[in-house]
Length: 170
Length: 214
Image (tube, rainbow over all chains, first blue to last red; front, top):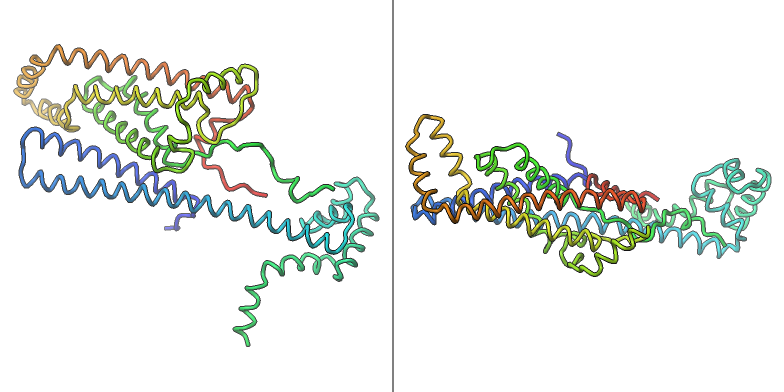
């Protein structure tokens, strides 16, 4: 059986919780009816124990589902923050390199993976103009070309991971 | 200066609520129970009673979720406020009403009204059927096996309680009809707001919204 993806987990928990609640409510109702009918016996004591177990399971399920939902939301938020942070890092670096507004736009588009023709079309400029802008960007950044330009930012993200790798190899 | 990195992200003011799976299952479960017991099951039969118990479990779970669930599911996120509800409906007529991270004020009132009616419906149902969810099923099983004596006993009991039972039945029926009217209003409200303001209120109740992709 394939393990549930993290996105499906809350749905599975919710279904479990509903089945658990159905069982609890039915069982508690039955036990209460027996109690009110005065049928107090070993059977009833056991029924109450089961009802208690079901209720505890329900409470536990509620807690877990709530926690799972909160964790998923925290992850989403962290991801959004990371995306925003990377954009901030790039913007700050562009400022550092002294890129003009036009070069910044071209630089962002290049980082997003668009090629010269696509950038030219998007900006309504000739391909030659975009190529010249890219060359100036690479010169200001001191990189040899597009691959090194993109790697400049990827390296920041990978930095620690690489350090560990190098350290273990030595 | 245009900042392409951020200007390309979707920007929609306040997002529509993303309802969690438990809330959605409870919502559609209760809707299904109400519809089935209104239209299909035999009144007072064992299936009717079993479905009623299932509805009670779902309502109980939803009410617990109103205290401990995620923010948009909590009662604190949508306090009953009739004035705000009227303002929201007025805004809807003029074609602009703000979006809310939980129920809008009119929807919140509707939710509380439905829950109140459901509670009355379930309590009166319990009053008629007795506390045991299986008593009626046991009775029907006994009759099916040819043991008619249980019916005599039952009739004797019902005779003694009959004035009380009539009131319960009356209230049960009124509550059921009220729920049906409220549910129709609820559906109409969702349709009107989705149409007038071009925001799909139905989708968040149907599917899990995936994490936004940049």
